[in-house]
Amino acid sequence: MTSIDDSAAVMARGLVKTFGANRAVDAIDLEVRRGEIFGVLGPNGAGKTTMVRMLATLLPIDGGRASVLGHDVAHEAHIVRQLIGLTGQYASVDEDLTGSENLRLFGRLRGLSRSAARGRAETLLEQFGLSDAAGRPARTYSGGMRRRLDLAASLITRPPVIFLDEPTTGLDPRTRGQMWTTIRTLVDEGATIVLTTQYLDEADQLADRIAVIDHGTKVAEGTPDQLKTLVGSSTLQLTLTDPMQLSAAASVLQQVIGETPAPTPELVRLTVPLADADRTADALIALRENGIGVESLAVQKPSLDEVFLALTGKDTEPSATDVQTRKEVA
Ligand SMILES: Nc1ncnc2c1ncn2[C@@H]1O[C@H](COP(=O)(O)OP(=O)(O)O)[C@@H](O)[C@H]1O
Ligand SMILES: [Mg+2]
Image (cartoon, rainbow, N blue to C red; front, side, top):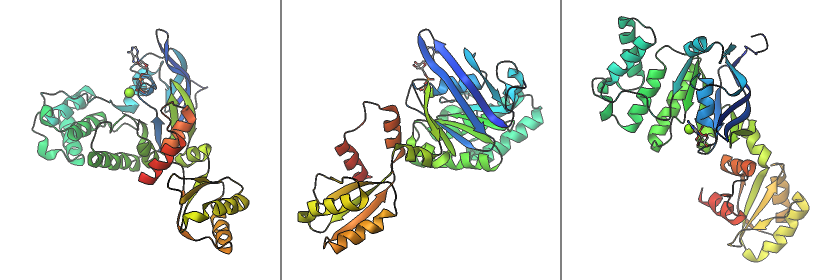
């Protein structure tokens, strides 16, 4: 189709999926560039899986259109299927087959010859650290091993575009870290990755760009840094040597930075929004000139967590005090 931009790895315009009265995906636009990790960040029920399943030709599109590497998902589904790998939130491997048998089966289903399927299976088992477990039934695998086997199965034919639907949900931190390394390796080898996640730190760590979705709509898009900037500036946090100087310090900071500092519950600390981190030095100089001692200071960028809360206005949003406490814990 001439109207579809074939330079994008994945493109969606006004994508819609309805389940009865529920608009699970409600007019989403996406443009995933070749070679990037594109993060789709949203809470449970946001519409991530539904969107990915439409892009992967597994679910009919109710409105709008989508393409993968220039091929229309609805009209060229057979081509699109050759170009993508999909790893589901729930592993699609056969419990009773061994790791090796599972991968050889996927290879055969993907049209590889018997020997090609065996060779590819061995390579992938090796690459994913499953060689030792290759002869064991998948039901004996740990959660992390199953997830790796599932990912390996989706990579049998070296697809250029890989959809990873919550690849690390429910995994322990160490296994998540291994999965992150694997994902980065796939990109280094030339793949484009669309990764859905509920984990803010995962999107922050892995994704080049992130679309934040909630209730089927995209509420924001950008690099992790752009999203952080959307929510606001950095904050300057100061701990004073003498708590008695708190109000004096507050008025000095008000003059220098032009923002009203907020004291924390312990009353030795001040938190000031900071549009420009360079003003930190000005603030410190002014405090010293006024004889106010500073014990410690930190400049903090907002976390993606705060970004998400600010963008979606969830009522789970903690109070200002909670945010403060959480930052201190972090
Ligand atoms: N097969 C289905 N039938 C009816 N409703 C569905 C179906 N699949 C998903 N939904 C609904 O669509 C919305 C989005 O779900 P989903 O795409 O699974 O979200 P996520 O993957 O972000 O958790 C939810 O409200 C969910 O209940
Ligand atoms: Mg899902």
